[in-house]
Image (cartoon, rainbow, N blue to C red; front, top):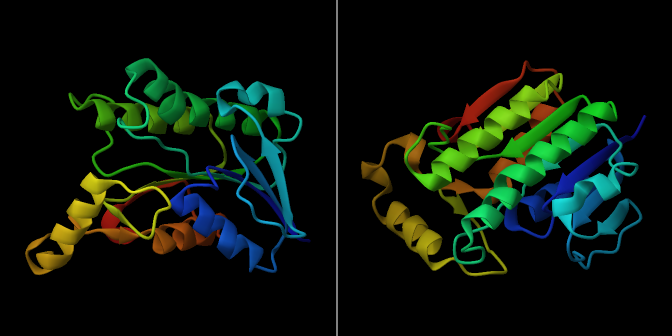
Length: 210
């Protein structure tokens, strides 16, 4: 039977590539997108649900399917308020897995980040670590957390710091341990889908294994 996938963050780089690959995958008949704005993609498989993801509870009857892909993330530049930042990077994934667990979804793949650690003194790493803990605490049967280093790809929005990091890594790739090298967003998307089509035990996938 064809599967139904849910994507949170399909307007971002990695989420858009998950969407692209799922559209091309015959295993999937329906792809549900939840975001604050439309992707602009019209396809028979795609259903869009537009609204404020900070209030995911309002979507709970539609958050049904076989797999959940969480590609949500913001930046300090876009969201300078720390509490709002936490609500997006931690609150949305936390609520999503809670609802999807209650709705019987058995597989979830989440984009986190290298260095994620709930006890870190670095705010970004700490929030990502707390997010991972929240996702794992939902006890969804198959849970996959990916921790990429710099994410390489063509973004609609420009992130100068990240672009500079990727450029430096490319120049000095031979000096940089594999764990810290930039990872192509397309590879992250493919890995998420590969894992959700397996029955591998729940795991955290470090950057060098993506």
